Length: 114
Length: 111
Image 1 (cartoon, rainbow over the protein chains, first blue to last red):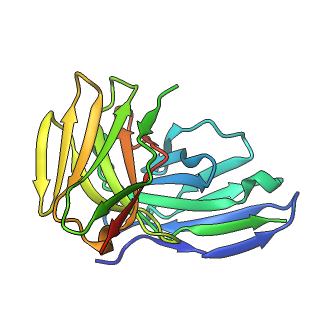
Image 2 (cartoon, helix red, strand yellow):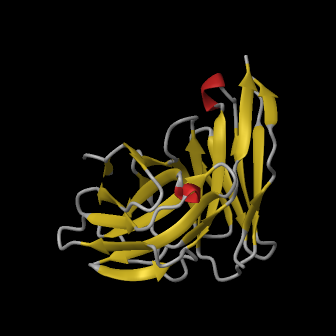
């Protein structure tokens, strides 16, 4: 079974731009969660989507948004990029029906904001 | 503030020894706990999940959960150099798949 895929793997943007990241979960998985990983803050939860609905949201500003499509693929968008948004963005896939399912991470998208 | 805290290390053990990694959590409502291994430059890889009090063993790995003490641990027996990585503890799952991660413990297994 194929794992979680994320595109693109690397991105370089400048301040003020916006960016869209994509995640395809494991086949059959309906929950997609997004995390930001930085050396200083570690892994921080952004949001979770299940059956096209946002089920949970972390403490990030409204510049961070996401959505999920009917095929469970998910995108996250960051608008008006800031230098501090430079991070590894990880998508995690889980079956999702029950609470607290095991999550499997994709390879991540490394975003650099200049 | 829901938090998961880990002993930050770094932790060094000789090859063949037992490595012990510890984690505490603040949210008593947390239902699910996971240990991930992350090699440098890679994404986290799930190695253990635990949901009930007690021990859960999988090969050389044993996870322990004590909900009364809000404590989770991971034991790695017969440590190998390939176990050298950062280990992340995660807890949560009471409202879906929102999990809180510790900052990780760096483990080095010395040949």
